[in-house]
Length: 184
Image 1 (cartoon, one colour):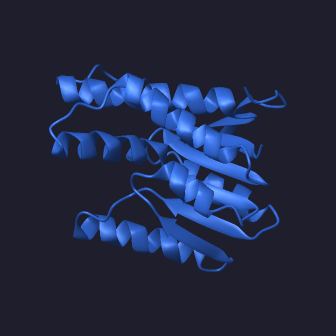
Image 2: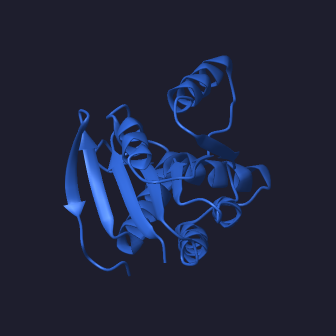
Image 3: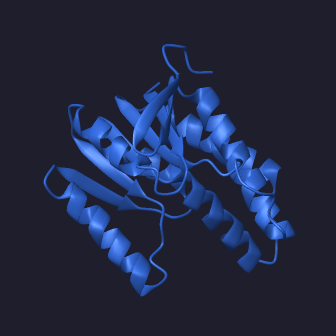
């Protein structure tokens, strides 16, 4: 199984920059799996900035907002896979189900996370997942927002259990939470 590293932290904490720096310190080839759909001009600017930040190094990009397990299988030729980010992936799954008139649940989250973890097993090298730590704030007012927080939190827990290394980034500073343990 690939070495899994989960990097978590608050919004704008520096976790993506830390993940990219970590990935670029590893021997390639490298691929960036982007889960963010471009939904407005501001997001288009952010995506462009992220691409430019990777342009100095040899990166390929796979854009996949929903089928993360499939994207990981397509990344089998790469030694380093950076997935940014799990929080947007969960959001996209919730949004997709809402469009079909169904409700994405914690059970569905667990099933999709198991698919992702299973897709990591045959891969060589290192997979770095970036996610947002959402459970440190106030309780959301609406049921859909609480469900998103719950699903994202469960996703983070499941990927963290499978990861050999987990790092929390706060104000640009990495804090190692888990290291050296065999992934479960």
